[in-house]
Image (tube, rainbow, N blue to C red; front, side, top):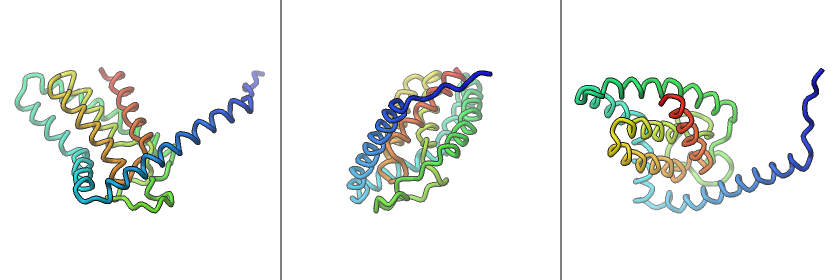
Length: 184
């Protein structure tokens, strides 16, 4: 009978130290962003940017492309396929890791919005924005480049409004890149 490999205590200890540093970095960045959140103008810009990633814009752009461009049918179908794959994977990851949102971890910093779900890792807004950008770039390169900037702004805004850590944003972007590699 095969035996499971034994993890060496130093391997586990080294990885726990790395995770501890990552968690400290996440908290540090989150607390830095609280200064922006507290100011009216940057907080409102972050709030509007975050809300722009709620999904309605993706649908509007996809429908316009569908009606106005010959490649719009393929683009629309490609987006549907990509999101049909991304959403269940995102949901499984989020409910497997079950990472509390930073505003709920006793950091004394209230979020500007109420998140639509309970957990923070990975960022669904960032995953959707990056996935949309990658698919859009495949069909409409100039629009896709602009969408990448917009996706980065959405990711940053999710930290500023207080519902994500930076590593949640990176994980959401990584999820989108992996899904886009599968569907392209």
